[in-house]
Length: 135
Image (cartoon, rainbow, N blue to C red; front, top):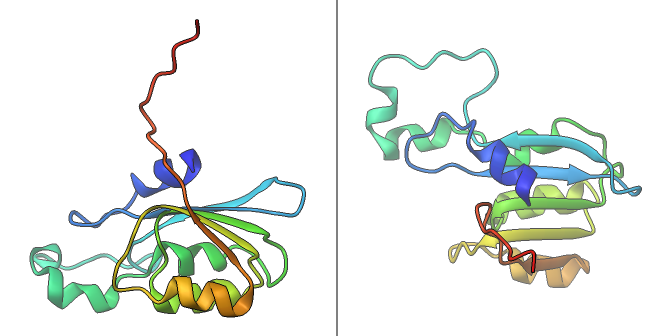
């Protein structure tokens, strides 16, 4: 989850920063991604001012993440926010078996989709700046 959090900080979106990380079946990191614009696209002046108008152009962190590996290569995805319905469908299509997230997204059908496909979808409590007492 820490890698997903760090990836989220790279997002250009001033309103919503989402990050994701994928692990393979040996628990090795195979990718990190964040929500943003297509690679190489330079937003015109004023693009970020209207959140509603620009939303349809934003690529979600999970979609960007899946572009980094082939179907069946990733086992676990951690994301800072529960996947939206479309992203959950994409993660299932890529064969992801476990998805961990920090923030709930109430408009998502992810829990129902996970249940149907037998995917573990679990909210985790994660604070990247928490300091544990070493005593």
